[in-house]
Every structure is written in C-alpha cells, then in structure tokens.
Image (cartoon, rainbow, N blue to C red):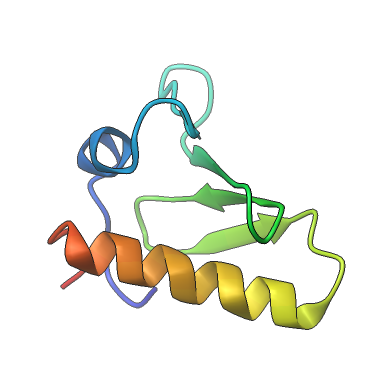
Length: 77
C-alpha cells in the first residue's frame, strides 16, 4: 500500500466480523472479503498478501477495494 498501517485502528475500522487480528499469535491482520472472495494478510509495513483469488483481476479488485475502504476511514495517508 506504500504506507505503514496501525493494525489496531485498521481492525476496528474494517469491522470485527471480517477481521482476525491477534498480534500475540501472528503479526498480520487477516481481512476476508466476500466479493471478490479472497483473504488478505495486512502487515504494519503496509505490505499485503492476497490469497484465494481465482484470477489476477480479483486481486486487483480486492486491493483497490481495500485501499478505498482504508482511505474512507482516514487510515491510508
């Protein structure tokens, strides 16, 4: 994403029903999207791992959707 993230703020902003974040167990946040159906691992460094996509276009759509959501929440600078 090109910027560092505060994963605690991201977890609260994206909604706990779609997010798994247990920093004691794993340093990344797991965010599950319904459309496209993917899971994204977000790290404090701003790096993302996208899994479960069937097409490259799904990855692009998922990253664009995530960036838009984080921007609207004021979490992406």
